[in-house]
Length: 391
Image 1 (spheres, rainbow, N blue to C red):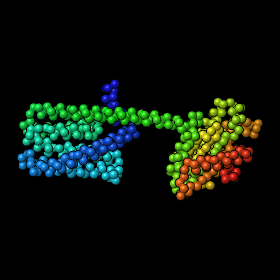
Image 2 (image 1 turned 135 degrees about the vertical axis):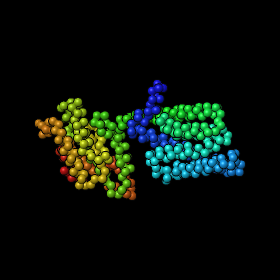
Image 3 (image 1 turned 90 degrees about the horizontal axis):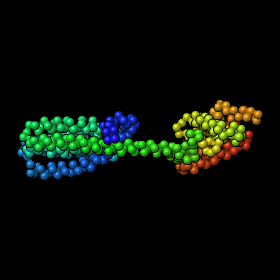
Image 4 (image 1 turned 90 degrees about the vertical axis):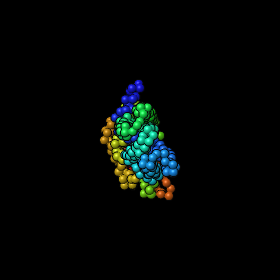
C-alpha cells in the first residue's frame, strides 16, 4: 500500500487529469505563498538586524565580511521585493497560476544564490556547513515539490556547496553532515508532498461525490431534466445574473394533452417512455446554457429563458410544440388525436433596474404562464397562449 501511494506521489503529475493537475498546482501555490509571506517577513527582520549589528562587530576577516555583508544586502533586497509581490493584493491577484509558479521557482533560485556568500564565508573562516543545512531545509520544505522538482533544486545546491567547501579545511564530520542533511531534506520534502497530494486527492473525491449527489438531488430520475429543487436553484442563479433594466425573464409551461388517457390506454411503461421522449424534445430546443428546462410535475414541464421579447417568445413556444409533434408518438386516432400533442402557456416579465430580480419574480412569471396554459387547455388543447392570445 505504501509503495503504491509512493508511486502515485512521485508520478503525481501524470496520475492527475489535466484539470485536477491545474487545480492542485493552484492550491499548492496558495499554500506556498502564505508560507513565503511569513518566512520572508521573519527573514527580512532578522537580516536587517544582522546588517545593523554585524557592521559594528564583524565575525569574519575584512575581506570575507565584505562577501557576508553583500549577501545580507542581497537577501534583504530579494525578501523585500517578494514580500511585496506576495502581500500587496492588487499585485498578487494580477498573477495567474503560471506566473505564481514561476515567481515561487525564481524565489527558490534566488534563495540558493543568496546563500552561497554565507556558505563560502562560513566554510573559509569557521569550517562549518550550518548555513547550507538551513538553506537546503528551507528550499525543500518551504515549497511543496514533487521528487523531480526537489532533486532539481537540491542537486545544484549540493554540488555547488561541495565544490566550495572542498577548497577549505572541512572536517569529516562536516562532510557527513552535508550528506545527511541533504538526504534528510529530500525525505522531509517528499513526506510533505505525499501528505498534501493525498489530502488533495481525497478532497477531490469527496467533492466529486458531493457534486454527483447534488446533481441527483436536483434531477428528475425519469426524464433527466431538473426537478422542482433544481428549478429553484437554477432560478436563483439566473436571478443573480439578471440585473440590467433591459433584461427579461420568460416562463413557458408545457402540458402533454390527455396524458391520463394515454397512460390508461398504453399503460405506465409507455407513459414513462412518452415523458422521456417529450422531455428530450424540449431539451433539444433550448440552445442557450442559461435556459432552464425542468419537469414541473406529472406531465407538466416548464422552460425559463432569459433575454427574449414579445416576438421571440411565441416563436420559441411554437418551436417547442412542433418538436413534440415531430416525435409522432402514436395516440388515439379515433379521438382525432393521431399523435401526442402539447398545450403551451407563456408569460414574460421585464426587469426593473430599481427593483432587482428575485426568485419570487420568476415564480410569479411561472404562475402567469400556468394561467395561459389553462386558457390553452380550455380552448381545446394543442395550442399556445401568450398574453391572452392564441397561436
